[in-house]
Length: 124
Picture (cartoon, rainbow, N blue to C red):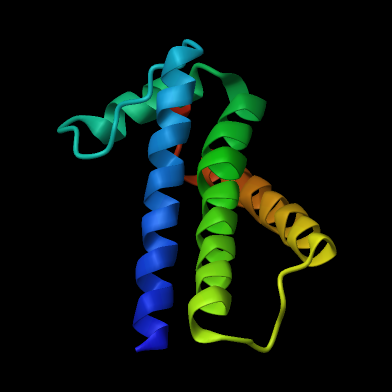
């Protein structure tokens, strides 16, 4: 039961993070479509490729993927620790900061990989 709770909380936090980031990016002038849009893939690629490689990597890799995953896992760990008692790892400022740095790096690697593999070369 604890595992299903952690998955549900983590996935919810990930989705909420991405929705908030997309809303924030839209306010700042980067018009990413919200999920469940019919033409989401094409519009997302067009909006992100217009940012250039660094912008693409930062927005898609770090903001949406890396920090979204960090938010999901951290909120899941916190909720599990609060509602199910002590776990094998306690959330501390150092562990949370280290996790944020690791997920930022992983997000950057994901963004570069995605830019090189799936971003349409004719659109760049």
